[in-house]
Length: 346
Image 1: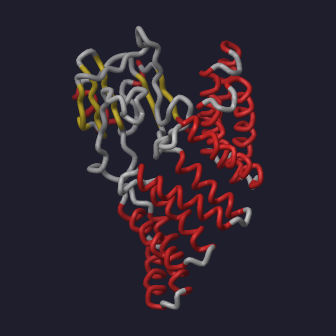
Image 2: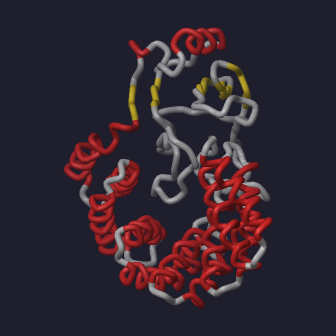
Image 3: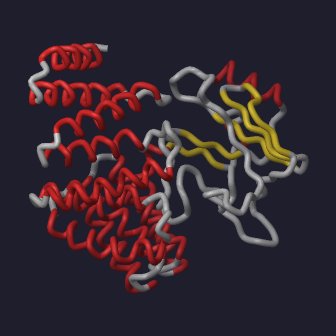
């Protein structure tokens, strides 16, 4: 929980929980907040508490919203999946939290008095009604309506309804430009959401035009150290590769890699995928030894971060085997090939 101080630059009160000591399977997080402070529980066990932080809804004197998994503009998603949420009108005792976990597992405690029960796999079906209601009450370009539309794009993409997500995203960006102008943070975030949909939809020339535009405007509007600048350049490298411009792809991926190393911890789930993009651009230029160096680091990332990403680790191992064969190193090729087979058969 961090309020709107996402980067923690203002050092506002926040509370966090360490999940590394729990089994690598879905966790149940319980947030208890009352006038004495806020406590966090994982699978019924208390893991953190803060007397300085309070969650109050509705909040006064300032307005507030409860956001889970992203920012209000859907521009900074968390890694992971939220499957179920319930909101109760009272705080629970530690005993109630522990008892609920033991007896009901992932189900919400005291569902009979819950103010809200929501399963997120239903989001794509429910959000059109929410958007219609918000549009009727506030208008198409109201911030709440725009946020709901951005979440709808994410829900469609998560449901693998890529074409629908692309169409909805195009409409959202048009509204954002008309209501806020091109140099507004919400417009930039909407275009960042659109960009990978253009790539996955095979609209490489449209993606390239948007990339050129965003490279100029993103640092100016959002700041050159904004975390999403890495994904902009990484996705841009893939677009340049699809268009056959391997030199530009190499420049874009090199920039993305530098930003990732500067802005992310040594072990971070976003670093491995960025290194895989970097390796592919090096491969296209025939820089096989450099490619292997980057792939080895990507493999290390995928096999040491928590939770481990063994699917991507296997892909990195296969590419390492191929690069070793290019360098006429059969021993390394066999070793990496065997590692990929082991991971694929896990």
